[in-house]
Amino acid sequence: MPYIHPDMRRQIDGDNVFDVTALTSGDLNYILTSLVDSMIDMRGLSYTTINEIVGVLECMKLELYRRVAAPYEDQKRRENGDVYKAGGTYEGHYITEEDA
Figure 1 (cartoon, rainbow, N blue to C red):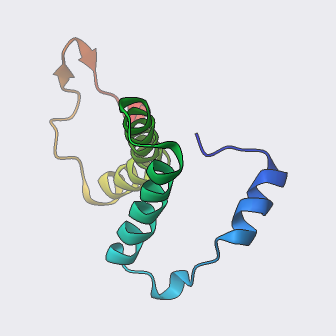
Figure 2: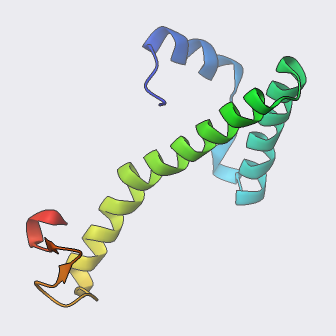
């Protein structure tokens, strides 16, 4: 979860300043891979380390989707129309506008 204490955020952010205006997806991949590699180097290669890193990356992905992608897709659905049948029932759940 990325919601750490503001003092810790300032400490971390002060050490990791990137020019995000020129950042590509490859650059982001490199930065994250370098951080992961440093963590493995520091902690040692083990199932526990790998499991912790994979867990963090998965939670990062899920939080990005929950906070950024899902609201964006909901907005686009409202703007452009739904693909799913209006009022459809999926696995016993009735899809309503409030669900979106």
